[in-house]
Image 1 (tube, rainbow, N blue to C red):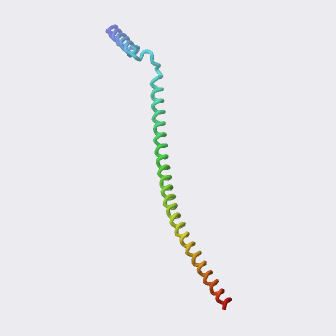
Image 2 (cartoon, helix red, strand yellow; image 1 turned 90 degrees about the vertical axis):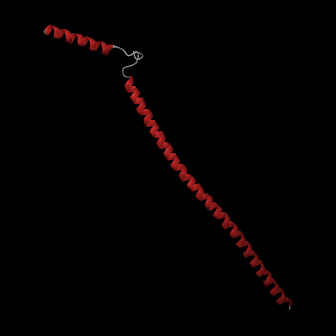
Image 3 (cartoon, helix red, strand yellow; image 1 turned 180 degrees about the vertical axis):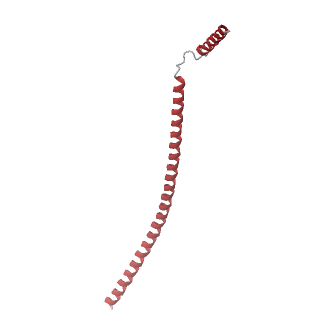
Amino acid sequence: MPLTLILIFFMMYLIIQHFINTDIEGLANCNKDQDDLTYKNTATVEQQQTEINDFKKNMKARLSELQTQVKGFNTQITKNKKDVAKNATTIKSTVKDVNDAKNQKAEELDKAAGS
């Protein structure tokens, strides 16, 4: 009986060793540490993808901010053009009023001198 148990145990040991040492087809030449590298590479790729997504998000936010600034500048430029045109009209009107007053004073002085 003990010899039978030892024999069964030994047979089980040989069967288990056979399955452990059997190479899976196509993986016989693979490095045993390859799985570890695969996980590291996957983690690196995922980290880089996260960094790329963060960069894109930041660039979109910055672009939106710059577009808002450009819209503000365009609004200010339009307002400045209107103000310049308004000021030009005011200056022309003021110059005309000054010239009219000058001409009127010159006429008054001519009349006073010619009297």
